[in-house]
Length: 158
Length: 275
View 1 (cartoon, chains in turn purple, orange):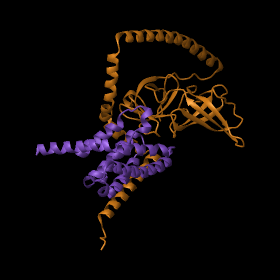
View 2: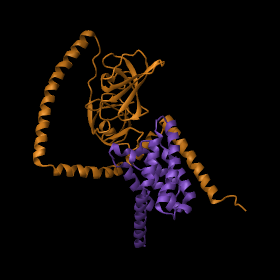
View 3: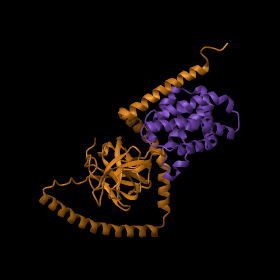
View 4: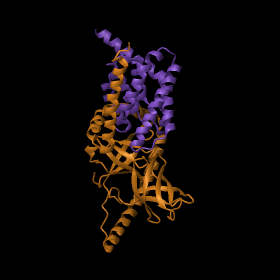
């Protein structure tokens, strides 16, 4: 239930029609979704579910199917390894580590996009990683709230 | 002793499987276009999510309309009525010109151009990926939209339909880095290929002979080669002609006539069959 709700919220945030001048300062909500699951709930995260949930993200962004699957898997793996050491530190340190992880994911994204005929500019991908890391704290709060809400409602039902 | 199958190695194996699957999917989708049905199915399933995400924007629009005073609305209606009168007069002139053109073509023995069947559509959203210039329009297969049909606006060409869904369609804009368009310069009939570079305000004509007769201010239109677009649709205005000393080729930078980033209403040319 938590996965479904957070995923739906992520899709809504991605599908929202933002004005075009905001595109360069928008965080990648898909990355933040995986970051939360990789850091906070990695024991519940299934790679198959992650791959399947990445396909609608590809469709919404218009990228080649599988691109976000590759990025999501890499981010989730890196954060699962780093999780125990950075889960307890303050938000600034968390954001810094997340920025570095997303930077590596951006490099992979740059490489795949170039191979599929696009002409990406790396500094825009860096900006996207930076703003994603910046938005980590409010998004984490939002997902935590949703997770708490689903847990409470499940407990009430039982 | 280090365990042979630690948790990390299981995670690494999972990662390798996921990466292999993803790379295979990317390869199949980008090289063979074999996953169109999967894309269509997912997009159809996402329809409620998209409609829900448009809701705040629609509500704000409604609120703005509601808060506008009656005076403003009356003024706007008057100006629209005036504009309508002017367009009607222009249309009369256009009818006469069309008839003259058809007569001249008949006299010259040139085949008459097929009249456009235009379907009005609204752009629902632009892709939020900064490197992908795609727009989703609110007309799809059910309205007769097919892959390959040109999409135009009141100012000029926008792009072409690349994926169709029952109620919506994806339009690849001409500024996307994967879009190539056969064009000609209106003044000199010089032909070239316009290439998108991933910027909304720019397309480029590359590898033109150094002696090419193009100057800033020239209008570029579709040439009709490739039979995908009608000839004569305005595309862009030349902004810069770069002739590097010692280089055999010139480079032309042009700005699309249609304001692609701010467009809301477009038209799909249904007379062109899909591919």
